[in-house]
Length: 490
Image 1 (cartoon, rainbow, N blue to C red):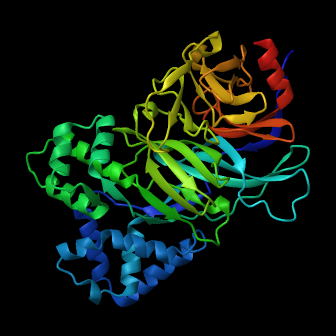
Image 2 (image 1 turned 180 degrees about the vertical axis):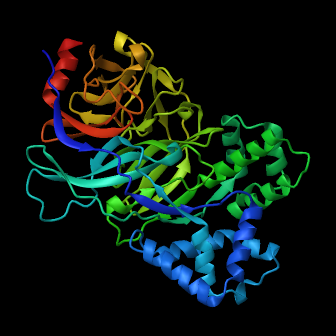
Image 3 (image 1 turned 45 degrees about the vertical axis):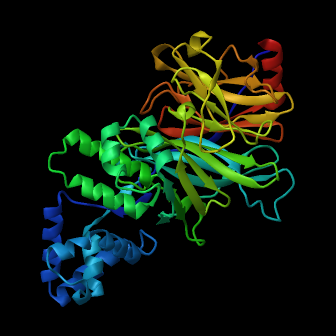
């Protein structure tokens, strides 16, 4: 039978008004020294007048802008010692004003708002009518320089599967960042090898460290290594990649008084020039019935790709760590929502072309991938991949896939995997489930629909999807119709 996909009226588009205040380093360190010297020379009255004007212009655009200025002053206060200045004699007003010069507004959603995933909100409340579910939708937001971050919207699916979203807050909040990780040298070096980091450079940095080390010790070793005047430009870039891996272990916490639309997960390391790509969120239920939300995503700094895992229980506190192993060394891995036969399971496209399944005893280490699908139909001859975490149904694991066909056209498809052995493909759609229509094919990347995670609600599969890497739309299809087509039409 012909499948009917219902496009829903809700759409999201980029909004340039959504801005964060991020750290800004204008040029080399000599410019920073010059700026600080100029502020130091200002009279107390000029400092007061200038800072007052800055606060009038920006305090209503950001939550606690003075705290942001203070943090950004902390980022450059080491320059005071280079200028032979004592921090203790500098007034708080001058510190705040210095911090403001090392601050810039960044419009996180100005260029694109796309590639969504959808999960149940961990807080459903007590007064929700029967048949309704609170949801959280994550998006890849892209701004100037194509730097991507993760942002959220909250809403409700009603008993007729209509989507109703809360208006986003005017404010956007950055989290507190905490680095608490103790690194194991053997595992750290192995990951650097997977990233194809030169072994001789690894030794230059790592030989100074013990079998276990903390972030500060690594920074000291990197700083000492960088003093070598004979280091080539390439090797200095490699050392930056070592630092990048260290920066990828961190925890972030948002204030409890923030709405979820105010929380943005922006790249912590500013060397991550391409930011955070395509987070695939999943509600994971462990064998003891505890629930944790995970998201797999890819970070890229222009030199190396780093697959990462994000973990949260409440969408206030997040723990971020890299993924290890040959099975996750490419974009677009998705975690199954529960263990299978006692093991974690992941669907991957580790060769960039085909779909694989990986099992692991360790959530962070993924090896020995087994290929389960290769491009089979004309609309997916270039490559296939997953479009979010597999969804458990009575008939099997439903995987929303994507395929790339002629003229690099991206379409969504579907496959059904065996519940106990997901390396066994029960069926897959011969024709696309969803392809870009005339209203969706124009954008930053034309002719593309792409999703990072779907959900089943009241008998309907709800698919949020990016439209040509620009905006986001939603589609629905009766789950029984889709399963019937998979089982009977394939």
